[in-house]
Amino acid sequence: MLQEEHASEFLEEDGRTERPMRRRDRELSFTDTLRVIRNADYAVLSTVDEAGYPYGVPVSPVLEGEKHLYFHSTRALSRKADNMLENPKVSLCFVASQKTLPLEFTVDYASAVVAGRACLVMDEEERRHAALLICARHALEAGKEKAEAYYAEGGRAITIWRVDIESATGKSRGWDRISTGLAR
Image 1 (tube, rainbow, N blue to C red):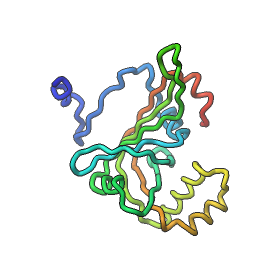
Image 2: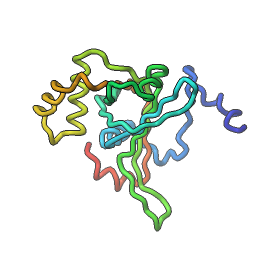
Image 3: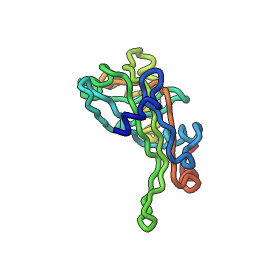
Image 4: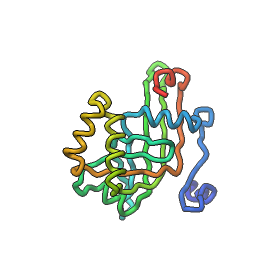
């Protein structure tokens, strides 16, 4: 199989395969890639279970700085949690904008893919900090006071995960049109 024949060309030291972006003309700078991540309302988190089966699920992450993402889930055991505890290597795919152009048979889009390692946040100070970051990003209208009260009342009922970013790439078609509508 062609893919297997050439896989070693892209194998990195940690066993991960990376390939150069095919459409280099659509590749975004690191700064613009972070902008896509900050503007996406959700991402699809991809994990792999112990039998090697992939699993993708939407999450509502928040980016802190350039190296960490946080997202929350329930305390209940889940396939997502089981997978990340078994194998912390994850990928997240963000789409900050998309517009189908049917008469051109294409789509304008701005997307980003992050690879990293997920870990369960156990430190209470970091949990609270991350939860309030998530609220500031996804429930800004509620305000800081309500977010703090909400966390004080129900913070123990949620699980916070951190993804330590190892790589991030962005790609866009129509970036000149899309970027004007994205927050910095």
